[in-house]
Length: 458
Image 1: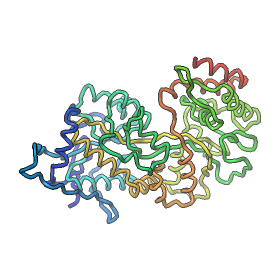
Image 2 (image 1 turned 180 degrees about the vertical axis):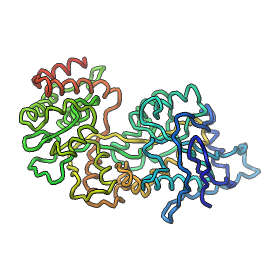
Image 3 (image 1 turned 90 degrees about the horizontal axis):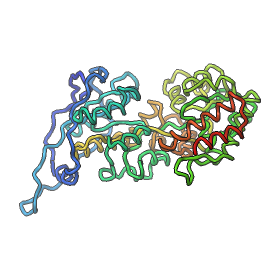
Image 4 (image 1 turned 180 degrees about the horizontal axis):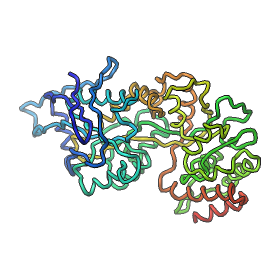
């Protein structure tokens, strides 16, 4: 029976008439987590949800549906048999607004069908609520507000940017997953993706997709420069990037590609002054040779430098891979006319992870099963290609239809390292940003700029 989408003013309800299921395994596991249970999360926050279209998803023959396993019933001789409890009949999932499952894109249809298949298999209702990525109505801020003002409105499962997962974990807004799943222990994860799942050595997230920083060349641009960060601003091409980026991701990537570290024996994170001078010298030479335009110091976002790059304002650029993959996902241009991904030997990446926000043990078990179902390689590969993100699993990337792009994406993902933790990035990013602007805008020498940056961290 296909799941029924019931009308709702605060979410998308994928419901099936619940069937009778064996409650043995849920009841047994409930005893383990009963002391942790704080509240049951059954409803969402009104006033921040976006409207949903009412459409019934079509399940294809290829849609994989997990099979429920039967557990032998307890006999009369079984000691202290627990009293069966009612299994959850619903889950609440929060997603970024750009992942609306009722949208008209192929990615939306795939996600809608996947959620519907799980709902039908488990005999439950799934309510999806959309949130912004930032701001007062964003995922993290809303989660924080609900935890104190309306705990009953918390979601069961939430998809968070990795930087927000760290904040949520430190505020106890999400639950550790070590006791609920071993999926993160699989070898089928890119190294940076495995790092994304951990907060202080504890598993708090199940990786979903990544977004490595990429070095990208304009289609048809001829260059003898090597495909490495160290040559990004060398004479022979025009390199554009947001020099005023608050997170200083391009300078940080250049610095680390040259072998620089971001921590030391001091209480606060520090930078290696000698390596920092090398990085700033590359940028200074690029500015002097004309390989770096003066207006890069006015850009604070990758979207700004990317638009300039697409308009012919540069031969090479540094940008999150999602900006390039979005062009491929649109399918409006031939591969020959699209920018080219260069195979660098190092880069930095972050991404999105699934996190558990309910403290109810029964709902937690079901929510984690849904997260595992959504990172299954077959689905994740198809969905990520349609959506324009790099899957966190090598096996999922192997199923991409774009055979020409696949090897470069694999190389990029294998060479990627996880972006430093928030506390490190918060400390070093302002110092890097100031040093880059001092060199490119104020004509300060790399040596003086590096010294000032290092001193500011002491």
